[in-house]
Image (cartoon, rainbow, N blue to C red; front, side, top):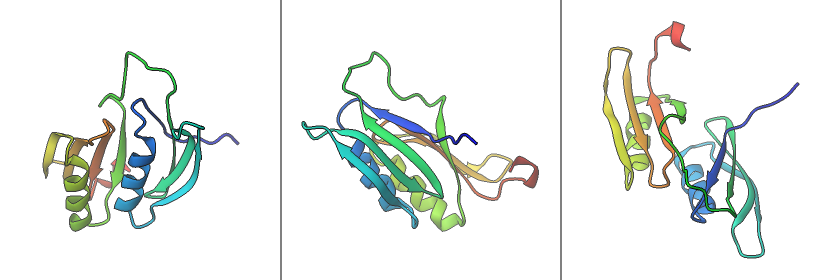
Length: 130
């Protein structure tokens, strides 16, 4: 059976810094693989947060595009405290697109972190939304 993992391509040599930041935010955060190029950039990396494996690398090619909020990582938080901590940490140096509030389906926030990766953080979603 095939498997699927989000793949984050960084263009400014920030993959390792991002991986270390993300794995430090989550209780289960773990770096599984970090393979470097001779120049020190991440050739291939895999980490786990919130039970999900995520793959990363530093692109050796400069592209005209980068991350977009149209694709985001969605986190089901376990508690309001956890949600507030994650929102605060991820938004620092980034951008808050939807501040933490109740939008009619439970507490929710949508932020882009300082690396350009977008995150949706939810708590207590309706059962039929899971």
